[in-house]
Length: 171
Image 1 (cartoon, rainbow, N blue to C red):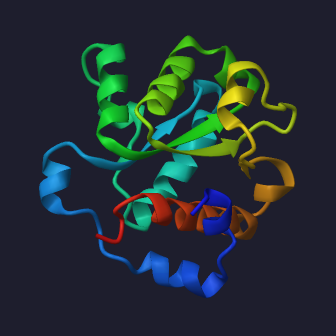
Image 2 (cartoon, rainbow, N blue to C red; image 1 turned 60 degrees about the horizontal axis):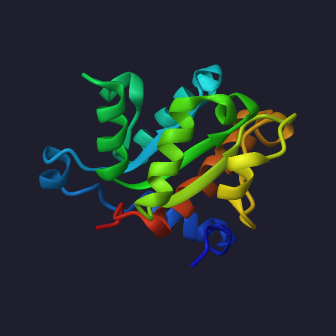
């Protein structure tokens, strides 16, 4: 299914999703992840909040400030290779970042499931990022969409449900 179809499921399905088991311990020990968070550091506070929620519902997340070791390029490549899906946080600064560009292009090349979040109200995807997005509609993580804790939780439920369609979170 497309991530939009996956995101269209009802709240009951999202609740069931939260109760699914974690990733297999052998996979975790082998350095595997359900997902990688690809973002520009300008959005780090928001991404930390997203990462905390994903961890709280059982996702195994590659997050640079927790896992980055050694060569940046090697670490990013391994993160892409060892993640089932890539959540990429689109903004003008993301588009302008050489590292973000490299991560997103490599994930696309490796045919990873790529789930776009729009994290900047003033940005309309264009250039290489618009090309990568294509006809997909990103999940909004800015302004009114996350203005209250309840609204943030609703967007997180949507993201988690979409991730459940593209990862082995329930394995």
